[in-house]
Length: 271
Image (tube, rainbow, N blue to C red; front, side):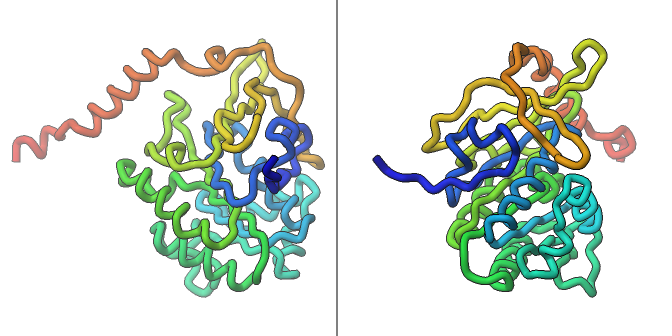
């Protein structure tokens, strides 16, 4: 039997759902609507990498570096010390400071890949963890390129011994992705969801795909607490269909959004 090296995520209750962790070298899509726990899951993944002595890179496109560091501290993870000790690089793609060596001035996938490789060289040789939070930011103005960009990132960075979480944002109204492609090239798909149950917000996670892994097929409820972070609870009795729109409704909403994009404003048509 082939022995598969797996990287634990550090999220209590999650790793047993994937036979102990994510296989080394995998590029995993972490998808879901805003507020479902994707960033916190990724913070746990990096914190566990720091604990295990891995090289760690976190790319943030929707929050500043300072915000990620503060979030980590809320759950008991000292990212600031890890940065000082040369075990973590947080690449800030939001603020775009020119005087910051670990900042991106533009959201371009080639620039992203080059900066990640530069950070890996800085951290040195060894097993590495990467989070890109989120990949969706790189194709907001050209969603049709999502699959091509995702493949490029995976093809180039795979050679650098990364195990990566690539976050993809989903629209609140339709649960549809901002661009389609990342899930097609990913080795695994971890989907986060949320729902209002009896007037209370509940969050869920399900592993929809994980190659080389006999993973759980059940949706599990999760909880997030200050001081400890995320924890996976028992399987939920709610089905995936209970926490999302019916496919026919989502399709009609998507068609309406696409029609809006294709419509020519009256002022332009008159010209």
